[in-house]
Amino acid sequence: MQERQQRPDQGAVSVGDTEEHGPLAGFTIGVTAARRADELGALLQRRGAAVLHAPALRIVPLADDGELLAATKDLLDRTPDVVVATTAIGFRGWVEAADGWGLGEQLIARLREVELLARGPKVKGAIRAAGLTEEWSPSSESMAEVLDRLLEEGVDGRRVAVQLHGEPLPGFVEALRAGGAEVVGVPVYRWMPPEDLSPLDRLLDATVSRGLDAVTFTSAPAAASLLSRAEERGLLSDLLAAFHHEVLPACVGPVTALPLQARGVVTVQPERFRLGPLVQLLCHELPGRARSLPVAGHRLEIRGHAALVDGCLKPVPPAGMSLLRALARRPGWVVPRADLLRALPGAGRDEHAVETAMARLRTALGAPKLIQTVVKRGYRLALDPAAEAKYADA
Image: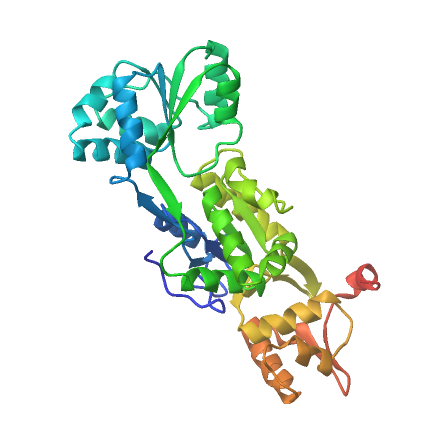
């Protein structure tokens, strides 16, 4: 995807004492989407986030697949009562594949004879572009609502064709069959692992090392793919630990969250299963998780790769962020140089590295008195006296 090139230690927007920053400024968010990644990345960047994009899967059309051809011929030979279209890309792919086989006109004619249900507005657009009109579409864009409608109508003895979209449809087919329906699956495309795994590995490493603040998922196969790759690399337990603690897994909806929930991961999801509400949810959740402290007469908020000092965004180098987090774990307490040295990535044994990183941190924060030097002992956040009692036993 096209995006501004940013390192995790850089802010996603111009910053300064008087400039505005978005609600996601200072946070780095992973995007696993294969489709609409540009749109999601742009929405996040517009709100200040740094974005790391790594498609967790690729879509493989089945235009030459015998399974799709067989399902199409079967529906032409025996007209279904209902056809459920689940995705715009899938419905268009089906029609295009049928055109390639010389069956396009027959398929469109057959679909005019059936009860055609559309999962959401994008599918409705694809249906109408094909010269067809859907009979109904749920306002929630939920397959659960589609299922409720079909079961209320009664499906006993009816033939229902479902355009599959590569994601699990938990209970959907089973419920229809339990109601007496004959269900025909139309497999239009499949999800496959990405051909180049290096971007996904970078995202996985960044998640495990807590270099990301959140990872977004817009399909269940993407979540399953990341989990599978982590297992292949022996990092599954580390990934799950990251999701249980510092890294927020954000899913566009409950179906997308299923592979993560099966591993015991608690996810956040917007009420409406769309990209916009997903981004708005992150705008609420991530700032709410940031540590905010009263320090030296200032309000210090610690984000993923930056800090807010009295509401002003201050990008901080990675080494500085490591020191700042170490100091913030016990605000007001002295943290020995040896402990701070261990917090520095790849610092070795030279405590001079702590002094160098601390000097850069103070410069980045723009308020040197936030961090006090305690001679021969270490450093401490200069917590305001009124807050000392609150954090005394932190």
